[in-house]
Length: 228
Image (cartoon, rainbow, N blue to C red; front, side):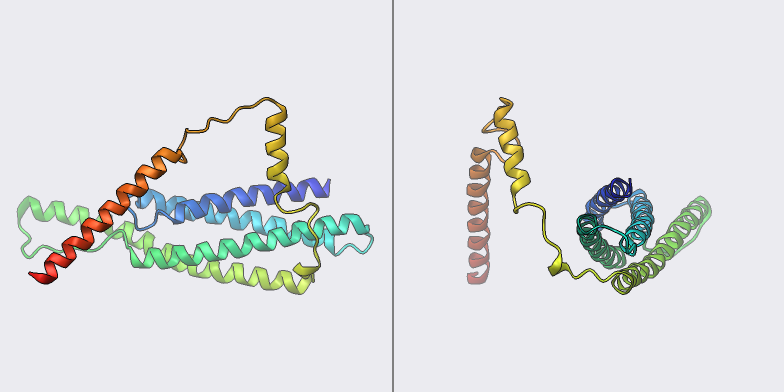
């Protein structure tokens, strides 16, 4: 039961971190918005909650001296995987902090003259933006604090449970799962289209040619500009 519980927690943590990573990549892009920043906050807090629960469960099991050798080896593999997840989460949190500071959503703008309806409209809009700006600043400060918490969690893990990564052996060779999936697909008669989806070779070749032509045009334009 403990093994299945730890695996379920680790799987949920992996999904939350993957979602957070995807959201972080859109900070500062055209898809950036107040909703995105709030979703980032909720997702990272969910990931941290799962991390705390996973750490507590794995720590309790690995500190059990009556644990069998095979079971201990399995939980040590889960521990190493969990440690890697935390490191990825910390990296993405640092990236979110840097991008959030570099690309603020709300920049205060003040007109030179305040008159009539325009002044009242501007005041209401400024008040709303001020509230949103306060959330943004508070979120970045909270993110800084949470990064420190994740670092402390990683350090605390290393002190409470000493599991050197180089001592943990994988259960199967690298790529075995991919080969097994491919074999199962062939055995089941599942056919895979050759020229579909974003990895279509014809589309890839066309994109490569277009890119080369575009680079050549840019280089030619730069040369002409320098000579003129």
